[in-house]
Length: 257
Length: 195
Image (cartoon, one colour):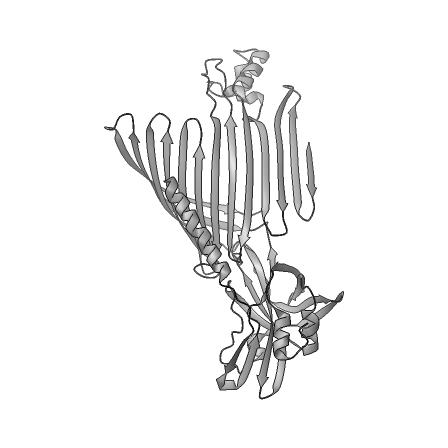
């Protein structure tokens, strides 16, 4: 069931998905935006759902079977339905965001997002997965347009996250530069620090370079070359210092319909 | 790491505030010596914007409007200068828009229609054609020839929205982006009824 409301300044979208087969609420989503006269826009999201979405096929997770009918050869239907419930956790996402244009070329966005993924229980040979606890992420991005020309877009992003198990800090700079009408180049640099409650400290530096080509048709070609440079240390054991580098190339296309 | 992040955020905020504080409000006048033309314009144009959230949450189309007087040995002409700009990636993410041909501004509840032509075509003898600076690089500079009476009527309006009609017949509405563009002050300077 969905309900939508919109006027000049506000929008509200809500969705409820109830599974009569399992007699369980599968998803409740409420998303709202409110634009004020000073162009400040507030965005709020509440998303409470089963993760993954509750279906009987969830019972296949961690099992050697490829289909439910195959699984029925070993388990009863009631058992399979219970296993599906056991593989499914509760997930709650709450987010509040604010964005404000600054002059004509700049915009600042900030949001705080809290995510809590519940635990799953052990059954049918599949071990339990502990819950994540409440993870809270704070993100601020500064968007600047036309800094190097007419149509470039620069995004400077700061992100900080904390949970019972880790803290995360990340800085990202993403630039999209036009070269003529059909070509865009997209250098990107990201640096992140992850600190686990178990003493593990991880630094990741990720430069990448993406090229986007728009064809005359509705197709776009993309190629990206990048590198992830990891450094991992352990505060509990100073002798541990691991570094590794991962290089990658992605080539793909997408089509607009 | 956290202190670095906070410092960067502080620098970005201070830079934005410094840019805000640099705006002034005066009427500008200059002599274009080769053509012997005195050009008067407002300190800054009025800014109108058109958002296209389906393409971008931060990019917009802009329309800048400003009054201009040219004085060639006593022969005065008045214009509404129109700068067309965008921070949308037009031609790649967003379809290219065609050039505005007519401008409609509501005056006393009635639309005033102004025919737009390239600014350089309106005043071909000016060596320095630029009359208004804009934060966003201009794609096209246009102008509509008006009378002082029309400018006075426009200055008396709140000018919250304007519409343009493209060469292909499409209509686009732009909405006032922020306060600024002191047209009454300009009219006082050129001898019109600014208040």
